[in-house]
Image (cartoon, rainbow, N blue to C red; front, side, top):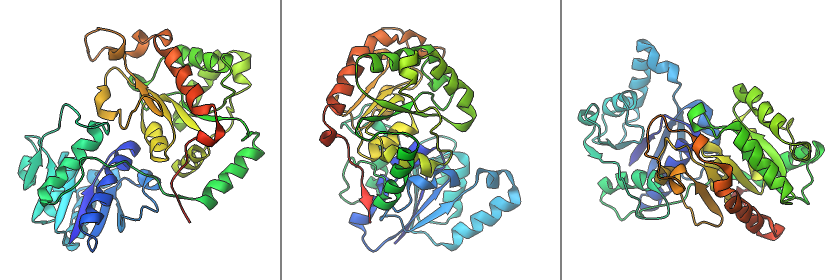
Length: 357
């Protein structure tokens, strides 16, 4: 059996959808499993032992009819037994349909339903602590008629050699590994997913003031450098002395390696938080009020993985115009400090990442 999984989206989505490969491999050990993703997301699935082949799909291909047709022909030549389209948009639905696979699975949308042999509705309420992002993906496997688990945790597979190399690099840049190292997602992937900059600076000041003894790395997208610098400038001088503003990896691979050497994550919910969870690191995430918390609040237990959302503290009716300006730092600063002290109190209790030799 040859199976193609399609996930044309962002880093967190590609990492989360990779759980399907582990589940499929356990039920079909002799199967050949392929993953169609955007090229820039490849580092989150490299070394994954359950994936046989990664097919890189550049978004520009879909904008050129000739290139797209050529790509479709390559997909058809693979002769897939099944295609699982997690993305379930027009472009990916066309790929699924053109593959000629007898079993084509996707999520139910009126405009793509004809492209699949079976569709599934998105669940609204999670049944496990895994969260809807996990459970929705796993339910597509029901079509195979096998006994699949309802949830699995995404994992990153990195080598100890790579991690060690970046650790040495961080030491040369001034990081002291006798003290905690915190990855801070100071900005979201867009303005609506970003906690107000003055609030973020205030929280960082609180962390340092309350003697968490943390060293801080900033995570942001390359084009957000000016905004990240603005947050740094709004912090007090003591906090600034604990932030390594000049340590920044432009590549996703480099960022993952820095994450592997950090003790925990704090900041805006997004791909960075998912990467840290996949490395088995504690995370404290701030959700955008425009995105329902129960979708991406995966594997939360209140201790090692914790997140906050406006709906936790306010009765404000959800609207598209709602923003995080209403989620005051004082609402959850005590929870954040409790999380920090619990997860940083003993170096031996800090998260360990999955490694390959």
